[in-house]
Length: 344
Image (cartoon, rainbow, N blue to C red; front, side, top):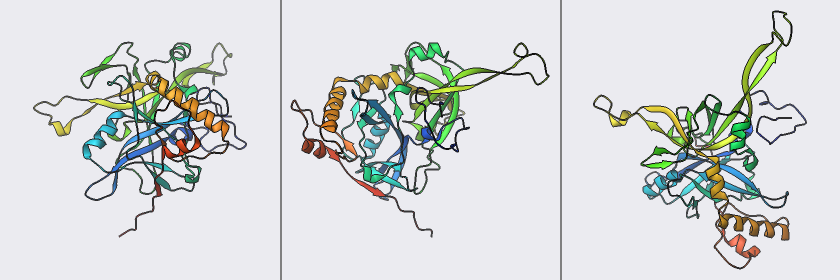
């Protein structure tokens, strides 16, 4: 049994290769890479990260999956006037597929200063994706922070795109480690606005925008003294990472301001990453329109067991219930397998 991810125990018949690693392989498999088509070369340029979050329905047997990324990543793609926006996801056979999101209807937080973008994610079973999701039950809460005494110094890790090593035929997500620097308790100034955020001591990079961030509680473990002294009075005490919670979405970092000796193009990262708290994500996903959409989709799924869907869903707002035709028409299907490039 693997209990590293908070409130989500996983059971295996055989020992897993990553069971002793600090970062479960499941975490690396929840991310996709975001890219757009270069107008000159017609090749896809990957520039950011996205990940899957799962929200439970009213019935235990149904869940709604959403794809999350940083809103500013989509805005930057818009500036390029690229004709295609895609996400690349790994498949179970060791390759990857590009999922076309061109023209998809994204949803943003009603507060324009919140750097979040989300879309319902319903992958076709035929794509055979090798991806996982972050369940809502893993979201860090204020009670968790208090109960598990999570705060400055506790271990944080982020997983996502490293633009220098994107992978030719599949995603190669990296993991960056750090520590909680501050839970401010008040809004902080960022990009000309005051926002709710967590601060993490970790040198963020451009491709990590939109990445999920996780925090581990620190637990105390006592071992018998190797000196043969009486246990537990003379036990050796160790502090190690405990169970891991989902804390939010990475949106960037602060740069050292340029001066006469430091040119703008040589800006230095201050080493503090900024994370949109997971409770802001919950606010977005529990807007009335999303709750209504989930109820209608759940009812449809229960009425027509086995209905399959395609890649992205953007249902139009209707007062009447969805029909199967409405549901399938609202989905956009466009994916292709990525073939290895031939060597010169």
